[in-house]
Image (cartoon, helix red, strand yellow):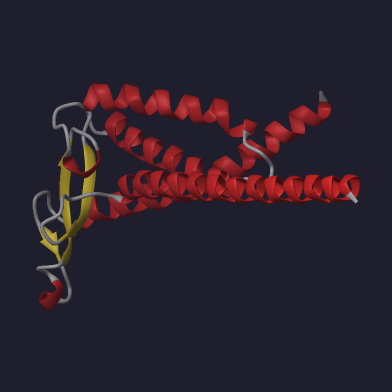
Length: 186
């Protein structure tokens, strides 16, 4: 019981430190934009860079990257579900599966960061990173997206590694059976 409690505590400390730093960065950058750039305006100190990247003050009521506008309630509920599922699953991740812990902490942080905005600003989420003609997004959106990519790549890598181990075991078992057969034949 004591060991199990320590494992859970350790997992949650890791989750809250990693996601807490991302949530802090997300909330700080959003507040900085809200305080210094009027809604609908942009800022770029290097004018030649403005066609490619700029900081804007924008909001959306949908999902990441401005998708599914006017879905604030749905996405607030979805964020809570995602956070609860991650809180449930996180302590079950193996001690040495760091890539999965990082990925889920990033997804937790992204969901929480945008959820905080939805609660504070009547369903609206502040977006401010604008790259070229791509949709405007924020640190939380980027955290969710990168967390998903890390999770997929981590799973893919683990699958390849496990297949190699199985192939090595199979070839080892096969060579052992050949050796036994050769002994019996000789």
